[in-house]
Length: 323
Image (cartoon, rainbow, N blue to C red; front, side, top):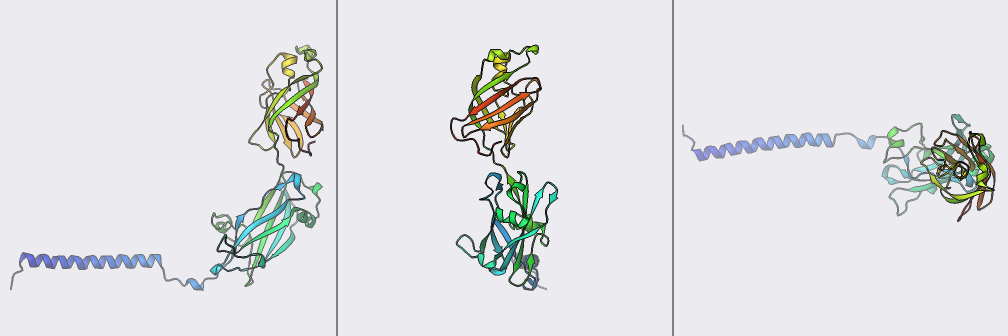
């Protein structure tokens, strides 16, 4: 039997290693291919359609209900990027706290409203109805609406092949997922914008204080004047004020301004005061009148301090609906 030389033996071993490596590579490639592309008949699946929210409806401005509307820009996502919308029915109901009205049909948008534009490869359409139309369908008037109410809009999509989709037959990922963003349901708040922050000139008259406890309201004369800074807080309609007695502590008590947790409040145009000063005294306010530039009210605390104050704007106007 012939003996193999060292050089021949090295060649044979290299060939064996190469064949073994190729077999391992083929096995791994086969395993990866089966994992990435399983043999599933995708074209046999039943497909659906959803309406992705591109622009959500804005809150309803309590002070501008005549011009408010429900308006949502939606994008039709269907197989092959076609417009598969036959119609979109829009239902609405009113919510105040846990109390809900009956749901009524507000109207129907035809599928022809969804068209392909340069903004997207998917067809888009705007679903829009005036707020006053919703009130009419609900049998409400504007006097029935309060700040903090909600209108709840529910969409029902009917596709060209007769399927229907709404918020009751979709998954949480489709309704709330960042990509799908297709809730078919929108709870729209009635809000009361408030923008009273600023610096005002104040004049306080009819000044009262407890003489028996050491106050000297007579030292204030007929009136006291100064500047008030009103600073917005993180709560809409609540403002920190630089002096809760509008000068009375200074002239009647020779004291620092009243601060603490006192807040000037604006609740859908209804003004007030709440909170307590650095001595724990509680404050309240009663509206008297206002013009475009001057707001007059009576304030008081539970220690007998009181006064009638007029805040004057140096620019802009007080909101017309204050009361």
